[in-house]
Every structure is written in C-alpha cells, then in structure tokens.
Length: 425
Image (cartoon, rainbow, N blue to C red; front, side):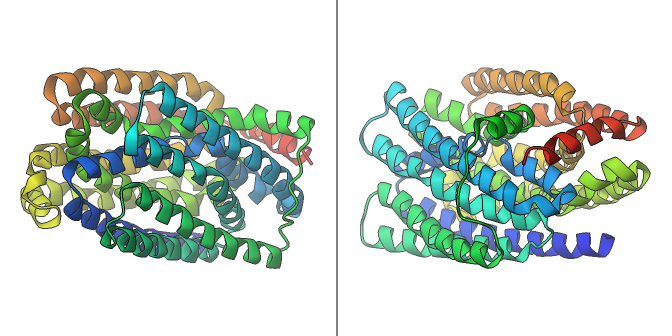
C-alpha cells in the first residue's frame, strides 16, 4: 500500500513541478514583456476567475476521491451522473462570473478578458472529471501527462500571441485553445477506459449528491479564494499597478501549494479507506507525510527570507522590487500552509466535515476582513500578513479536529456516508 502511495505521490509531485515550472517561467515572461498595468489586468482576471473553479466543481472532485475508492464497481454510473451535474454547473458558473463582471463596473479590456476567460468552466469541468476518476482509481499518469502538455501548449500559444503584439485578451484565448485540445485528448482516453460520455441528470440523484457535496463545495470554494484574498482586495482598493506588484509574488504561493496538493491527492484514496478500517495506521501515515511536507515548506521559507530581493530582481526585474518585503512574509506561510493541506485531507474524508464547516467559514471571514483592514493600512505588506495570521489560526483549528477524528471511533458514521453514496446509483 505505502509503495503505491509513494509511487503515485512521486508521479503527481513530479508532474506538478514540471507543469508549475512551465507556468512559472511563462508568468515571468509575461511580467517582463507586459507593462505593469497590463500585467495587473492579467493577474487580476486570472485570479478572479480561478476563484470560481470550485463553484463549477461544487465539491464533486472531493466527493469522487472519498466515495469512488470504496465503490469502484459503480464507476460508470458515477461518471454518467456526475458528468450531467458538471455540465449544468459549468454553464451556471460562466453566467455568474459574467454577471459579476458587469455588476462590478468593469470595462474595456478587463471586462472583455473576463468574458472570454469565463468560457473555460465547461472544458475545465470535463478535464478535471476524467482526471479525478483516474486519480480515485490510483491511476494517476493520465492526469500527470495531461497537465504537463496543457501547461506547455498554453504557454507556447500565449507567447506567440504576445510576440504578434496581440492584447491581454488573447492570452486567455490561448489558454482556452490549449484546454480544448487537452480535453479532446482526454475524451478519447475516457472512451478507452469505459467511461461513458453520455451525461445523465436525475433530480433525485442530484439532491443526494448535493447533500454531501455542499460541505465539500463550500470548503473548496473558500480554500481556492483564500490565497487570492489579498490580490482581490489590493486590486480593488489600490489599483492595477499594485495588483501587478503583489500578483507577481502571490504566484509563488499558488504554485508552491500544488506540492502538498499532489501529496494529498496521492494519499486521498488511502485516507478514505483507512478512516473506516485502521485509524492507528492512518495516524502514522499522517505524521510521516506531515514531516515530509513541512521539510518541503522550509525550502522556500529559507530562500525567500534570505534571497528575496535578489530573486525578484533576477526573475522580474527591478520594477517589482517593492514586492520584496511581502515575499518574506509569504515565505513564512509555506510550512504552515503545506501541513494544513494535509490535515484538511483527513477532515474532509471524515464524518465530521459538517461540524468543521462553521469554524472554516468563521476563519475565512476573519482573514477576509483582516486583508481589507491590513491592506488599506499597510499596503501589500498587510495583505501578505493577513494570510500568515490566517495560517497560524488554521493550524490550531485543523489539529483540534484531526486529533478528535483519529481518537474517536466514528467509523460507523463514516459507513453511513459510504452506504448513502453506494445507493445513489
């Protein structure tokens, strides 16, 4: 079991590192070649629309990772029903994002870019649904290769657009084009894996999925928006220039968090099963994995604390040096953030996710208000500090629930969730 976890974790981590490196260098290229204002528009639209990816998913990825490993014989039925739900959610989310763009008073290239980029939800939902099914089956290579080629193709098309003197909007057109190509490849792959591409939607099934997914959805939506809270508040209160300055370094945090995400993804099927069968073994795996992710988080911490100025100047140029003090604060966040992702994996796979939700909502509101207050008072330094304080608080909150979950015999409750999911189809 642990050998398979290690192998899948290695593949997922390697895939994330390669795809993130491609995205990282592409981001640097854009920061250097675009004006700070245009880069601010790009970073703001990218961050704003990305906040709604969990809305379009609505917790279904987490639902799959929790339930499918327990009922692999139901894979085809799960896929058809969830494909129908994902299709409807994608179109509703696109409409929501476009509506919000008009309500916020956006105009010009910023509004056009938002409208174009809001079209990504349908192909993105298909992309992640197929990959989620493979990950739940502990067959991760399809998703690894898809993410790498998508990142590479998107960067190539984006660079070509900039070289031809096209506007910021065409960067999002390039993203969509690369995504559509990869979705086509995954659809061909899905047919070979006997995943039926015939969406099915039944009201009864949708309501049953809703009963469990609503908790996952809110947690994932808040988690996705969470890291971008300072970027959004800075962009709205301080303008595109400072959004570009902070956005340049916030990308490091967004890229770095994919490391614990990859490890958590590899562990998710095992965590789901062990919560029912062997909590003692789960606790041991959790501690070993926790030590690993903390060690990985110390690397960017040291690097950003002692080499932030040099790194920013090397990567982005001296125009972005005002971001250096904030980068040191983001470095302090990494070890806490990495460990907190691992703890969330246990909480979300347990029967206590409903009890955890009010605490998570309170934490999110606290960090959001803190970001508004500190950003207005201390600028981008305050925005970064709001996340650091948020991660310290989340560490103690998560550990309180993890200790309780591992100490108490709640497997009967978990089996109820499992049986309910088994009867969906």
